[in-house]
Amino acid sequence: MSQSSTDNFEIRAETRRTKVFYRGKYVTAFNDCTWRPYIYPLCSPSGACMLHEASVDHPFHNGIFFGHRAIDTHGDALPLDCWVPLYSPLYTFCSGRIICRKRDWKTMAENTIRFSEQSEWLDQLSTPILTQQTQYEIQCGDSVNSIRIQTTMTACSRITLNQIKEALLCVRIADPFCPHNGGTMVDSAGHLGEENIIDTTSEWVDFQGRRGAETFGLLVHQPFGREPIPWFVRDYGLAGINDFRHGPLEMTEGRQYKLNSLVAAHDADHNNPELIALVNTCHSDNA
Image (cartoon, rainbow, N blue to C red; front, side, top):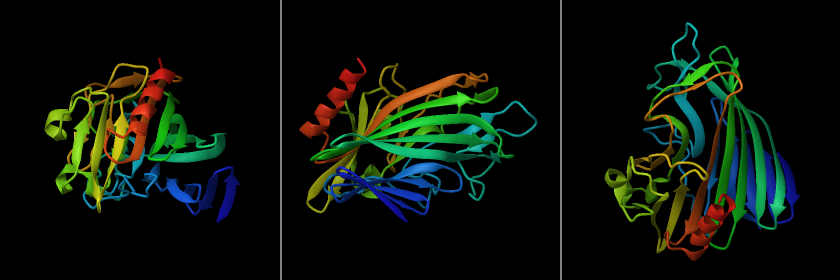
């Protein structure tokens, strides 16, 4: 294990897991498994972990992650699956992987640190089909810990990101905060639950519930600076930002796809003033 401290942040690099602490409190970690990098946990300032690392029903839903289940590489192979790993009973296509090649960090402010990650999406022969560069900007507050996610994917050759529901940016919420288990899903328009939120384009969705006597929540925001994407949400605890559920994208070599979003773990409910101020700041930054 290696350890590094920068101002208020402490970075602990363990086997396949790089942990981030802020003023001694565990906030989040970057993880490298055999099929993808992902973020888990993401804790609120009071210490509630808002993510699920691997559920029994969907063991490939790993905290906050990217993926795509049906990528056409225009060869003789079946569509490439960079969503469900080979071992899973739900595996159907050729198995691909997403591998982190480089990750470093830089302190941006007293309460903000930025992780820059370079990854490759590989086909079944370990040939890169996409490169991905992502900045994860972690901001820690009194009642909100957030991650701004800005990513650029660049095609290494001609590919098609096919129309499918299992794709792009996915957030798997911890069980206690999901409607199936007594929690609540609410969007920015006040709608409740999967039935009323799926396929809408509200500004954000928030999963919230109680741990003991306190309320905690996890907010997932629409991408900034572009047309909103219809939500793919599930009451069992899934929030997906997926451009490809309603149509494919063909990418020639060098073509890029960009996304800029926000995930925030917060104490109290969605009326938390610090959370509201954070969302307003993000909008101002992208005006």
